[in-house]
Image (cartoon, rainbow, N blue to C red; front, side, top):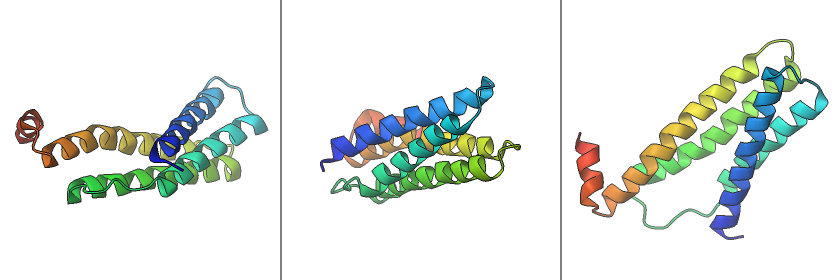
Length: 128
């Protein structure tokens, strides 16, 4: 399967996580909410694990790409807590941690790739 298809699957999984997170905050609870969140977390993890690696990345960019796999693992931990401690909001802490790491990687990875390719504007942004 090409990399673009895996990235589309990851985006769909992230959207499912958003829906699965929003429903309990809007006081819509139940089995469907847990299933939506869990399927989204599993799709993100599988998409990150099986997406083919981009060849020729710098060490920093490869490390950031591996960090994206950890985002899927963190979301799956949140899904675990959603199923096994439903009266507590531990799952939300894992969801927020995964989201914070995802935001960091989504900003740092393009800069690392551009800096490795010799883009002068990216190097100026990195030096600031």
